[in-house]
Amino acid sequence: MDLTAGIASVREEFARRLQSLQEGDAERLRIDFLGRKGLVAALFAQLGQLPKDDRPQAGSLLNALKQELEEQLGATRTGAAAPDSAGGAAVDVTLPGDPVPVGAIHPVNLVLGQIKDIFNRLGFSVYYGPEVETDFYNFGALNFQDDHPARDMQDTFYTGDNLTLRTHTSNVQIHAMENLKPPIRIIAPGRVFRNESISARSHCQFHQVEGLVIDRNVSMAELKGTLAHFVREFFGADVKSRFRASYFPFTEPSAELDIYWGLESEADYRITKGTGWLEILGCGMVHPNVLKAGGIDPHKWTGYAFGMGIERTSMLKWGVEDIRHFFDGDLRFLRQFRS
Ligand code: PHE
Image (cartoon, rainbow, N blue to C red):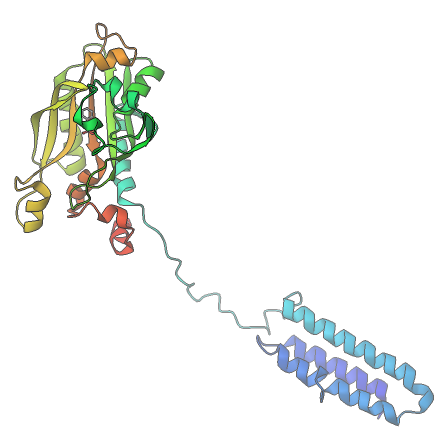
């Protein structure tokens, strides 16, 4: 047989097979052409029948063919010369794709977003302060006496000499007074830490939103009105709430705001300590000593402040019966807040 014609037909046949190559068939093609018993090997076998003088030239033609086919195959495998879509690998672009798991916003952030929205509409801006704090900002400037029990090691995490993890966001009140000029109207969200034993209703870390308003002639009535508005916006118009007189070193007078949670189950009993009411925030008129510590003249300015627990608030909003859910990272819990 004429070797040149053989080479031409093998080359043609290879091109045809390559054209209609299906995914995963490249190896079959290689074996058929370049394998030990393949078509190229069969051509090489014919070399012996040629006249001795013709063999070198025919040999180099065959080598060239072999190299050419190897290169084309290699290119197919790396995808550089993928078969065209008409006859090529079948990809059905109309099939739905594999679902990509989408995350959910953490409930703490979700609630924080809603709280920010409500206060933004009332003209509050958002202000941030540090989580690691000196005794001055966390306690001293807030009118805590040196022997106040909150300073006790049992409540406060100390990270170094005179440094604490803040036990509340009230530290931001002082930073805001130092850095902003009154009138001041801010909320300050963030993480706080307390050395408490962990239970269904308390944790060693949680989140608060502080509020601070300083202006001329700010009154307790304004504080109550603002918070009552917040509660209706956040929980709905028919929520039951109450103000209760309280004490904080940094406000005078002071109050706490409770929301009615209910007393229907054993869990309700544990969460509300048997009262049915759950406290969500502390508040009051900023103590003159605190204004002074923040560099503001209490004869010219008055103010109110409040601090609410975000987890507490979320528990009420969604009926979450255990604060620990917020920190466990259990996806079955977190996925329920996908909106
Ligand atoms: N810092 C207080 C707490 O953590 C809450 C509070 C803030 C009370 C501002 C009054 C005014 O309990």
